[in-house]
Length: 87
Image (cartoon, rainbow, N blue to C red; front, side, top):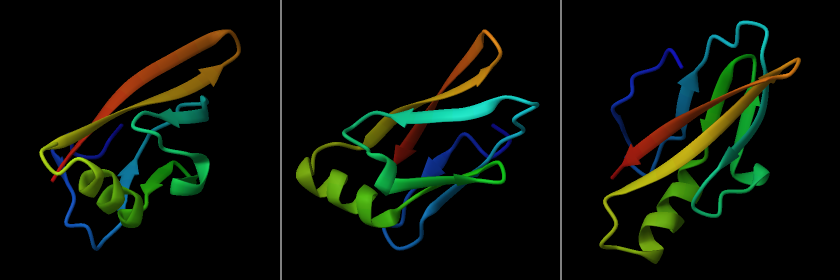
């Protein structure tokens, strides 16, 4: 991931994260009940919808952050990483 690791949502703007995929293929984003309709991955940019983040934080108002894992694959190699989004 080439975007900042210090990510905070304002609940209005989608979160956009840039990646240098280096030949790997994005496979998934997981965590906190996120589904493929809550994000897009296009041209090495992962976009997580603000509407999803707002709903997720509203469900548990005491929660201060959400943690997601992402997966990239290339041949028989898998790369896992983590994203933390704070409110």
